[in-house]
Image 1: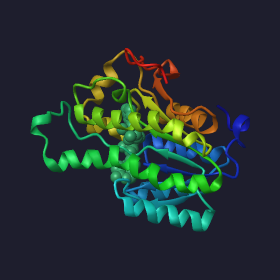
Image 2: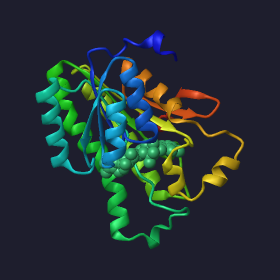
Image 3: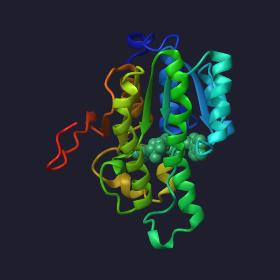
Image 4: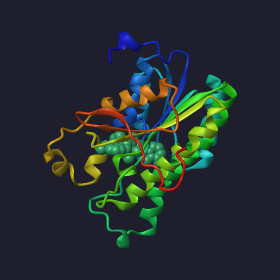
Length: 258
Ligand SMILES: NC(=O)c1ccc[n+]([C@@H]2O[C@H](COP(=O)([O-])OP(=O)(O)OC[C@H]3O[C@@H](n4cnc5c(N)ncnc54)[C@H](O)[C@@H]3O)[C@@H](O)[C@H]2O)c1
């Protein structure tokens, strides 16, 4: 997508991108700014977040997405300086460490940490930004899940559980948010070349597979497509060589489709 073709799509919009200091979030923040949005880069990594924000003419805020009080403070600050939030890419996420993650060996601290960032972080984010979007008369949210959010991930079952959690939220909130003009969707990337891959200790194995790694821009393309569009409650896989594809969940036997 060239800057010229789409440079005005988000003009006048205020966007927040969590985990915007690196990887997929950084790419999405850059793309949103390129397309006219004022971008609030939210991250726990201050130097990386500051660098991205200053590079795109946006603003950095220190935010631990798992902390509800910090979310409230950030939204208040953006409302008072920018008038509100129109777009949110709830993207911050972590992997626990070297694969395989053995469930029965996990410490309480490890379990709580990944639940706090990957699951609670998305809940707190939605709860914090939606009132602001309602006051603006609408908005759009995209959550970064994973292929591990729609299928099993034996190497890291807890990561998979957190990514399924956010899919449940997105699919369930699409309908109730509609009357407020708010869309909510999820992207489920395959392997993307970011520092998160190093945390798994499996970069070599992942790189050795037939599909080349994607880059953050590949996911940012899908994120901005969903932030600009009107569909809601949907889940898109994004895979190397295939791009973004809507994932159709099988119906529940005996239940009418919703
Ligand atoms: N890289 C992949 O292959 C891949 C595949 C599927 C999904 N994902 C998901 O994409 C998202 C982004 O990951 P990435 O690959 O760009 O990784 P990354 O490590 O490059 O970026 C993650 C960012 O989130 C920030 N962060 C971590 N904890 C935070 C917290 N508590 N509050 C705020 N910010 C926090 C980090 O400082 C970092 O800047 C994650 O949700 C991840 O699970 C990644």
